[in-house]
Image (cartoon, rainbow, N blue to C red; front, side):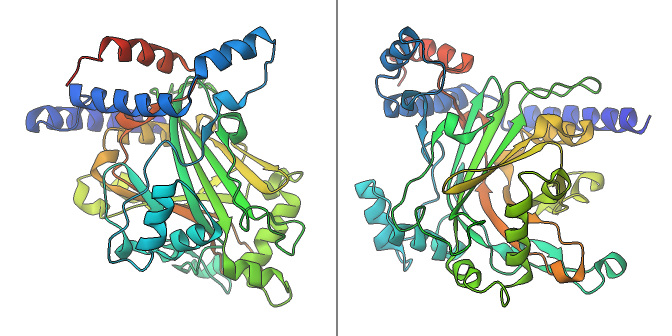
Length: 392
């Protein structure tokens, strides 16, 4: 009964927001939005050069596994925010962008840049400020329930991607090239359990969820975040006896998560919407801002040669969580959101928690998210691109 009542409330809010947009000329799916989406797809189609011919060759050869022709370059689908000209990292990052070349120096510059070093731009991203997230601290968290801003994240964001597809992405390498950066992704971390790179893939439903009998697959907006191990984490891994509790807990997670379902279920996702109180959302929505969500059965942890991957299937989440996300889909362009991940600490010796890594996503717009290669949407858009060549 509670689910039904809350569902009606969510529907009421969605209708109210739609009236508000129509009344004030808000962000509906306009012709300009569609042109923007088509332009983004055109740019990606250029990147996947001769995709059709290579794909046909793959089918003729009877190869069913994904080929390089189907995979996109990491970080190619959504732009990073523009670095300011007076930023200490400006020269390094501008040179990297001009030469389309990523080095260990570039990755370090991305990691060192703070919010004051870049401009907030619609539909862009940057590395997150770990202190944005309030995480568990001890002693005796069960009784005291105290939290505090996280210390520095164990991993730094290297890049982010966003695509739409007809189904979930079960493994990132099926759709994207995993970054290969000499001196960054090929290093020995000093701990055999911890890889130099962490990839988190989140599959978010794009269709309105059903209250009963929801599917574990379907049309999705797929968000991929690629993280590289931070310099201070490498230092701590040299001696686990003196390492921070957050580092020790992550080492234990890497050891156990592949085979221990209960331990794998201690992976937590958090989202902090900036200035949410000023956006006009009801209190039962704002009260969840920054609250963690345990990723239990919807998460899959896989260890690869030089990276670990956590795949999150939001299709498997509770109805109300999916309904809330669906309700907010048209509101994303109105705000900035900080997304972060951590491992839940439960005992005093596992606290304080620390952020694994995160991403600050600015004014995210689903209308600008490109379609994945081979999806039905992409095929339809390719046909539309031919018909819209005369658009100015």
